[in-house]
Image 1 (cartoon, helix red, strand yellow):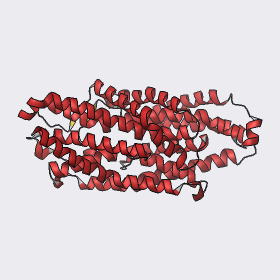
Image 2 (tube, helix red, strand yellow):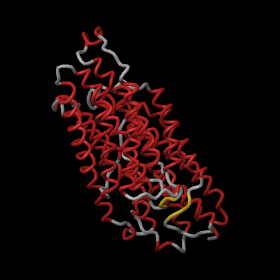
Image 3 (spheres, rainbow, N blue to C red):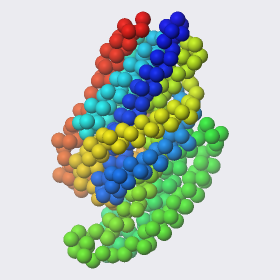
Image 4 (tube, rainbow, N blue to C red):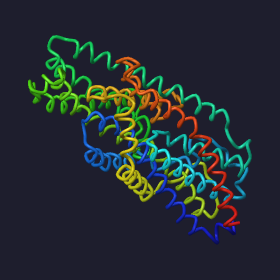
Length: 421
């Protein structure tokens, strides 16, 4: 308690700096791979992706990010045995933020799309092992995280594969692909509005005192989906055939129909990302602030003041602007060649998988889902459409994320404890 009284302000300042660093890493890696399909498919430019991120990432974080967060992400560790030594938890949260942020910076520099959730979980595990004891780690939940390395990409890949096959059957393999593209495009746009609405209502509107039942949520999602489809139809109906472009690429005009549809999915993915993943960076920050403010009380949940949500949104956008292009290029161009139709299928599959996971409790990572969805799109054209060397590097980076975060958190924990104790 004396340590918190003496260094409380220092701890909060460090938490803000490390939290900003962590959210910067989320923007450079996590948001970048969410926007990568749109950029890689040529539906939006990097500048447009950044503009979309600024608007919709902020909206998602502030409106649906939740004003209360679990201080220990995903309940992966139990801090009850150190309630009388809250400074240990502060060292652990700071070390975890710094370790996860550093790993995200390395991964982003290499262009590896890794899971920010798994980065912070690995860091928390490392801190718990050396700071509290191995028994403080809920190893059953860690097993679920490891299982998600398979579950996430398989589910996302399967759905994206089926979506690509549906576009092929309904649009590309017909006598008049452009006419059929215009006919079925509003249906696909409806799915975007419907799915993202469900993600938002299932995951993050409780702090707005909006508590809808499942039937009510589906009704609202259908209405939003119909409105989205109407807006999509308005833009898509104006697209005319371009004979010159079609001579160069037979389906050029059809792909132009999918370009505005990808704009919808890019906005939706940025909003969903802001609401779902901003807490990975600001949860530990909120924990430190609440412990210091309460004089040393360790709580499982803590309030999220609006300034912390704004800090998280700012860090994420900054990360996308400064280093996000590397991960964008990996997801958008290096795994497989994307067109607007393929990119749209990948993003819609990823959003659908997030909805399924949020309702069934499947332990999934949005990054792994999206990469799996891009793989599914590539597999629809045959294994030769994938760059297997890039895929192998991505899988290795997933396997390394947990231990890398854990080892660095251990080192940072002992360093911080040595400085302040």
